[in-house]
Image (cartoon, rainbow over all chains, first blue to last red; front, side, top):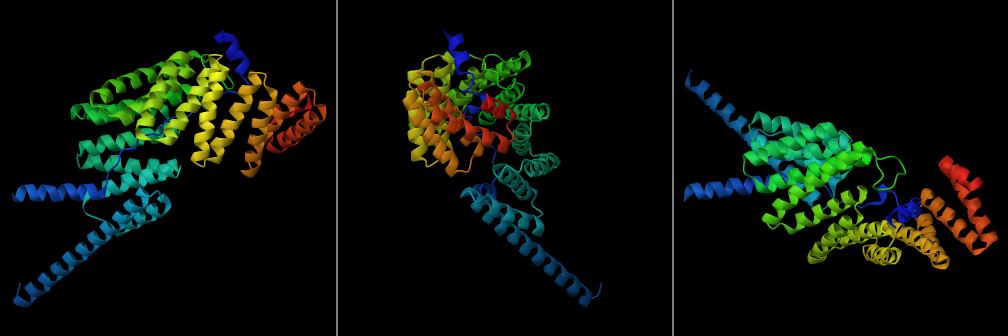
Length: 46
Length: 368
């Protein structure tokens, strides 16, 4: 059954039609960097 | 040095400190504004601010690394992958110089993603491996999971790139199958970790791509299981775009299982969500899929209805290839219904568009 369904649908579904999930890019932020530095300063001053 | 010499030297030092202070503050302000703009999705403006920040310069190499990384990501989002590669590469070199292992892992991950998009899979694999090795060394579970997900994506893209043109899922060359199986293994390894750390959003993404991998391998039942998990998680988060993707992928899998009615139901959900999200291109694709599904169900009236909807959107979007496809499908459907005038009209339109778009196979089909 799978075989015949596959053959009949051949013209309409292509591997390009699948919808991929987004890439996960790693983030580095200046804001986070300074927040961490600030936290470090606070911890060190305690 | 006499007293006046000491004073002049102190004044120079003071001035130099002042200039450096002003420079750092200015670089920081520009970088923060670039960051803000990228966060709201204005990557073009963000790039300008980051470039300006680099021109001003900074002596803080962690700040410079963050700027390079964000510039790389902004160019990635703008689909300028050559520039993205350039900045992620700068970031990698810098993090290695300052021996920032976590930063090096992140730069490697971003570089791997960019190389994947550029089709440079072997180099991408090297970057993914470095990302994974460092994450494991640092006992960073989140990083390890992300590296495994990226690995899966690289092998998925590699497998897809060597698939024969026009081949059906499950009917690909051995090399493609090997790559796709590796992708599935990496996604499974990722799932073990993201389940352990209870990261539902990451689980959702992995289930989606694992489903697509099973689909290309021809394991349509497994694809359905994964996409149903993806759908469930998308609903938990109220993530309409992810929900729409899951419905569309489920529709595709049910077509290959021969369950056309079920496929149509999923494509209808896709259409409904595409309209909610006001995504006209996806709306057109959903109409096209529905037209084709009703053709498979031999319900030609409904097929024509959806193909006409697809045609109208393709014309609105000035998508000549989509328009050509719609005309070809309409010509076929009207032929089956015995409406030869309409069949001829759409066949002629299809021929005209095929000539214009340089689609030789379309032109030959139209002439037949």
